[in-house]
Length: 483
Ligand code: FRU
View 1 (cartoon, rainbow, N blue to C red):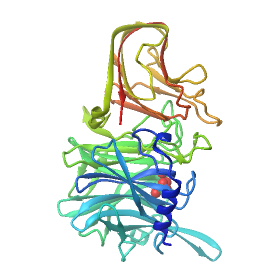
View 2 (view 1 turned 90 degrees about the vertical axis):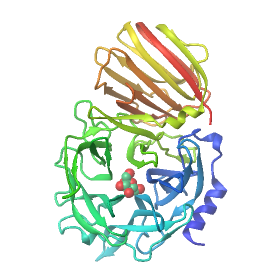
View 3 (view 1 turned 180 degrees about the vertical axis):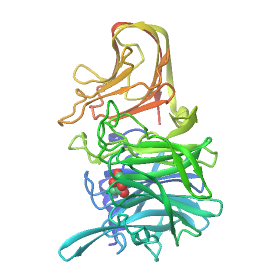
View 4 (view 1 turned 180 degrees about the horizontal axis):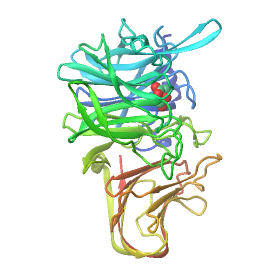
């Protein structure tokens, strides 16, 4: 049996029932997932592929899983799209991207091969191409379409991965993560007339040592009057209250000169401040929106219960916008079509411990505006009952928000608290939490900053409790999300 059929029949026999999974966040039918791949629109549907190891809940030989949606919220699983079954990708079909073309749905991905040379294992990462009809994909027989040897001499052939493609003014372009001679990361740019033959153009951006080591999963696009480069650096070191995850996602804003392909960019900014956010990728919808999705997990921390047979999920897709030189994120507007049972509380006083009638659940959209108050700490507890709790705590003096999942039911000795600084303090702090059983995504001040995190608390812990050590006046709104 070929590798794709083998994966599909394994998935069919072992897939986890929907009630055991998040209601609308993408997960694998069974097994491990990491990076989102091939996030694209093709024949009026949104396609999302992902790094998938169906056979266990751990990373393994990488396949591309696949699902589609008409609205970014309801996803349908499709057959596995790619398996590591050819000489040019036998050790893994690593991350990549997709585009609608005249020859079909084009997937560009990294084919990994390991060679034993004089008793020493060497790894080579090259870029490969496949075409499909939105369901079945055939690898191009001229693969790889970019061989690492096309890079300048001193650039790594071992770390050369995660191509993101786009089409502009008659040419295809691709950025990929790479390691330069000193071992630090960089983003390299290639150009092609036809997706099959590619020329190296330039280094689009490079790491001077400020931002970790290798840079993975680049994405590059125009937004408003600027260009945005997203990268996922490895081995970040915490500085102040930034970069506390070893693997972070950063964005750089700047001006791109299309004639000489030079990108003049300013400093890196954290894209999400949570414990679980990596390898973000975007697409441009036909109606002109730039939508981003990311893997909502961390490489170093795995807190899911051992008996759970799916591991890893994606964030809610988020619309990006650039306002006064800052990247804002908000959940895709399509989510609003699924909001039911709205409840509003106006000018509500929170003092001590307060639960509000109707405000409970594990799949919901909750907003709180802190209008005024006199307090040191104000917390919102979610996935709460007498045994469990997970909370976000606002400290106005520090202008910080602290997340704590210590009592979420974790059985691992891993990071359970994270504290972030609010970068644009406002007289009215606005918080919006999207809860989907095992995750919370916090959007602060209309998406100026976000914080994404997972927790695997048993579902019976469905209370929401507000706590304040003084007095706070809040507007609170909640809707259930019904898919
Ligand atoms: C990022 C990453 C990519 C690679 C993939 C392998 O999370 O390391 O660079 O293509 O995961 O699964």
